[in-house]
Length: 73
Image (cartoon, rainbow, N blue to C red; front, side, top):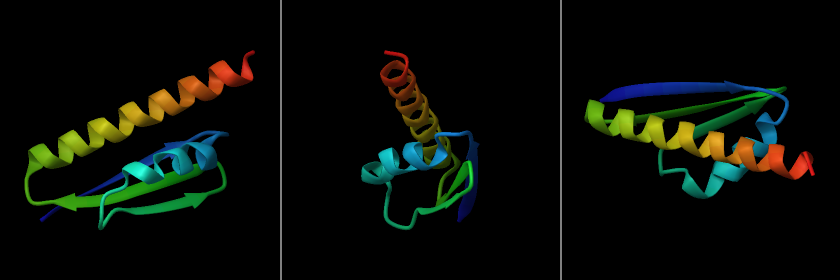
């Protein structure tokens, strides 16, 4: 089993982490702190870890882009 942890920091961390909730897989652990959140997950294959990390990073980018666009109006 391979384990991974991604940590995201920023003022909108809580909002961004909530926007990812529908995409969370069983066994994923999300912890939110002041100005940051972490996502921990595991898989049997390195390719699955990389694909999951890539999906999460892309979804965080999209959430931040949408927040920036909405706030910037």
